[in-house]
Image (cartoon, rainbow, N blue to C red):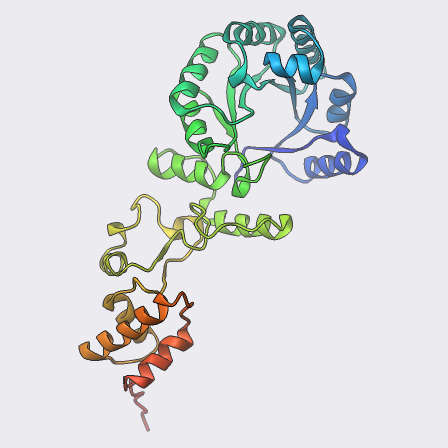
Length: 345
């Protein structure tokens, strides 16, 4: 699809994960990345797996330094610099993350960034590890980071308050070059910025070319849903079953006339490999019922359309799912005739 970087896993985690990262790295021409703490064994495992990029990270917020790492700020800076130097000396691309950046003392955060920049890191990733940033605050933080490093800047956002994609976009607006995203938003706790949401926002709302083949987004989403066994909610933006579905009579009538009326004209279902659906329920109107009846070969009169629509609304009001078979039964009961097929002899 043209995805730029694949962060394939944490090679030191287990033999199975090391093999998975190694297999991914050897199976694609795209840049692959391995994750590593600021620990020699982690970095060696990532380098040995064959990835082109090593993403090394260390906590920088005081609460994580003291209660998770049991270390000091000085330890953090020293380990960060040594790890960046080890990766760059090995000839790999280096990405460094100050974990929990959005809960880190800002002066110390800049000290860390300047130190790893001097050590030669290629990328600095700013993670909103606990999902506490807001778009305006995150934008200001990324602007400040960009002003204190010559490295390229990347962002990593979590969705604890439903702000992951918005924050990632704010980071890009502020000067970041790249965002870390995950298909279907799958990630720690409430997940990360969604691949499909971020790509389509950049492509459609910002009108920028990402280089991604967006027509395969739905296919990719379905593969991840199947393999992860994590069901995608129906109201999930871009890839949910309801993303391009219309029940309301006003909405359905509008999209039948012109899809731009109740869909963002900058993003069509075809762009992501999806299809538009007119679904039936208690809010369904006559335009949608007529359209569906004609699709099934019926020739309804105006009165018959109104009769069938009333049946659809009443049935849907009982919280029942209305199927094509139900619609055909309503049509037959209302005496709606089917189109006659002409036969040439």
